[in-house]
Length: 301
Image 1 (tube, rainbow, N blue to C red):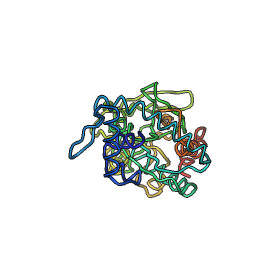
Image 2 (tube, rainbow, N blue to C red):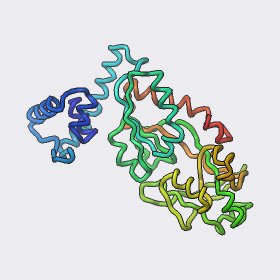
Image 3 (cartoon, rainbow, N blue to C red):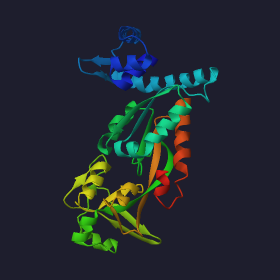
Image 4 (tube, helix red, strand yellow):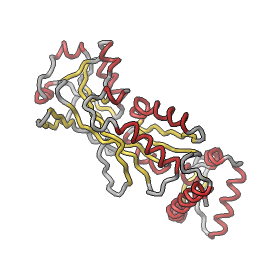
C-alpha cells in the first residue's frame, strides 16, 4: 500500500523507486501484486506517465491516510518524533521560495540531516495542480478553498517600486489616486489568471487599486526586472535593499503599504509525520517574528 501511494504521488515508477530506495522492478512487481489482490486495475501505465484509474483514485484517497497514520505510529515507536527523517516534498511559488526560503531550507537541513528535500517551484497558475503530489504547500494570499488545512506562517507586506529613470520621465505619484496616470505592472497571482488588486493602506486610509497597462506577469522576478528597466511601477515584497542602494529601484508612495499578505503552510491532513510537522513549526518560528513587523527589511534578515 505504501509503495502504491508513492507511485501515485509521483506518477512515475522510476521516481518512486528512487525516493523509496528500492529497485524499479521490485516496485512494479509489488504494485502489480496489489492490483491482483484487490481485483482491480489501479494504475494506467504508458511509456511517458503513470495515471490513476477511477478505482485507483478512490483507493489512493483511502490509502494515503492509512499510510500517513502508519508512518506516525512507526515514528512514535522508533522515537523519531524529535528527529525527523525521510523525503519531504515542498511546493511553493518559485520567486518566494528562491528569495526568502532558501536559507531556511539550508538551516533546517543542517539541523535535521536525515531529511531529504524535493522542492517544487511553481508559478501561481500551476501551484494548485502541483499541490497534490507534495507533503506541504507554501501559499501566499487568501486561500480560496476553505476545506484546506492551513497554518499561518506570517504576514508579508509589500511596497511599490520603480526605476529612477521611469520616475524622472513620468513623475512620481504623491497619492494612490495618481496611479491611474502611470504604467503599473500587473501581477497575476490567481490560477484563473485574474489580476491581483493592490490593497494600499496608510494608517486608517485604505484604497484598492486595480492595475491595468502594458505588462502583465505571473512571476515576481520578471516584475522586478521590468521595473528596473523602466517599464513602470511594480509591487515587490522584501526590502529590495540591494536594488535601492545601487539606484536600480526607488520606493514609490513610501508612506503606503500593500497587504499584508498571509503566508500559509497547507497540508492535506492534520495527521502529519514528524518531518512535516517539525518543518512547519520551523517555518513558523522563522517567519513568525515578521507577523507584527512594520518594515519588510526585518523579513530579509
